[in-house]
Length: 527
Image (tube, rainbow, N blue to C red; front, side, top):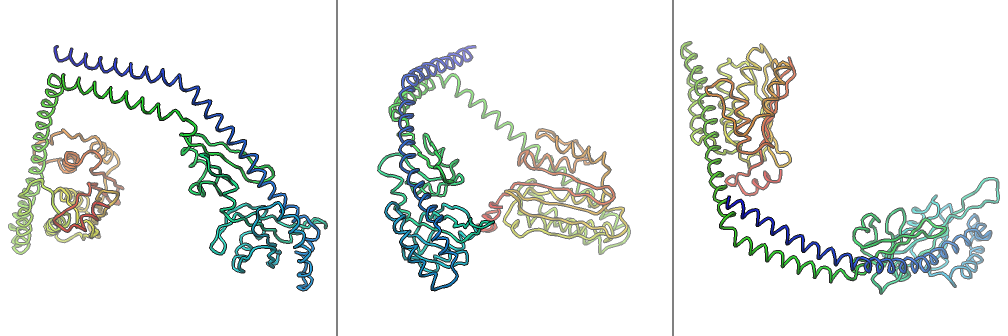
């Protein structure tokens, strides 16, 4: 009862102290919350108002200028002109229109017309023909477009307006008016020098910003980066403008708040440390010692279970093989008797380590010896296909996992099949695991029995001991061995189609074999 009382007092003191700290923090929060919100609102409203007045006006003006030029009868007549000489004569007139309308009030660096047939005319700027071809390909057939485009190695903010003749019964598209402004000039128009980032948005994407790092990001990505983001549409366009306000501007008192929180945390940790040092000898140390003893006992029990399972597997295989050796000897088939005895000796030579981890390819060499023995037993009636990826050479696995499954496939699946008895073994890495599939084209398993097997495998518990003796231990013991060593995420599953065959899938963790080459071990770990 003494330990229980101390534990309760320790927990109670922690609860009281934590409650006091939270109460102090909450009181400070209530005092400063109003000031923080008021400051944030003022900054937000001011930024949004300035943004709407300055940026919206600039973009509306750009749209108005382009629309006025596009609506001019002289401009439409110029773009529709097919005669080359007349085209250039009319260009001089349109140049005067552009000069008087656009340049006194616009920040555009270049004004270009592109006819529907792809004929260009530069009223200002010195873009190359290749860049003009890019503009034609970009805006041909498009409506009003705002975008950022790279031309001749420089970035421009581009505003394109279609020129349409509405004088006839049907509208006729004649071309485009394109206005280009250097990207840095456009950014300066957005404003700089304060702590608020201003951006131009189209279809939810930041196409221009006073902070170039935001360009190309979505509004949804930008919002979590700031304390507050406000947006406003630009009248008459498809654009919106936004003011992104950092938390440091929105909540200027945060620094003081963080200092107080840090000091409170330090005091709390100091008290917890003192309490721990005072009471650890009564609670913590005895609990750790008790837990360590329980852990060591559990490890010993698990090791005993693993050894028991492996020894039962060995005994099961040896007894059956010796029976087959005697059968062949009684029939006088000395050559097959010798092959079977030699195979058995090779297999037993590799079983002295019990349940130790073995290289996957080494285990497959022993498995091939076993299959050779079984094929002698069944008078060579079945064929075996191996499809094992080379990457598994760099991996380890518990021994005696696949052999009992193969034995089940041969004795229960293929033994009574008169012809075309086939066994297929696949091995490959997958998502940090290694997977083996053992398939036969035998008689399959009846649905009711298959359901019983699947339920038993799914419910196998780590602590279960196998039944004594050699009967009925194969699949369940394999499942228990894998789960004892590797955990419940790994194990075996069984699928079967009556009259067509059975597939047993084994999943194991990809454990690298560092004795088989460092680089190959890395492959095993990655796969």
